[in-house]
Length: 130
Image (cartoon, rainbow, N blue to C red; front, side, top):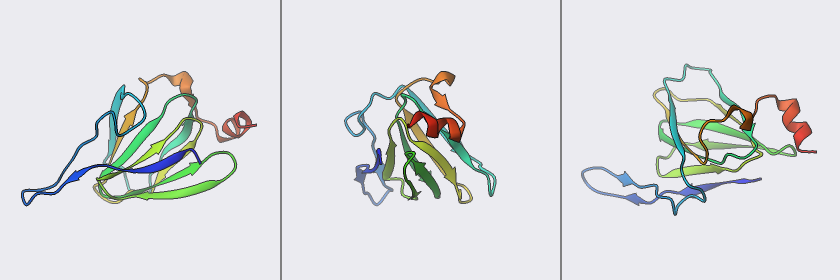
């Protein structure tokens, strides 16, 4: 599947830990940053794929599951460490579920928002993979 977990450098200190994401960590230039928070219990986010955009997701606080589907297989990745991120390349359907209370999902994106880049219908996504 066209995604992978990437360790984010962690600098440990008695005053608290620090992690740094720079452009050499992820394989794209960051053009947009956004974050999800105050997600109600039982709510789901995502539910789409991108034609061109790549994303890097980090659970800054709490935890959530990322369900990935490449049109052939599906896998679930639990994000729950602020020093680990999930790289999702283009052409992958993603859903975010099971948000813990107080969770924050940081997303670094390779492109600015462009509605035409989204595939929001799962059947259309599957058709695009054939």
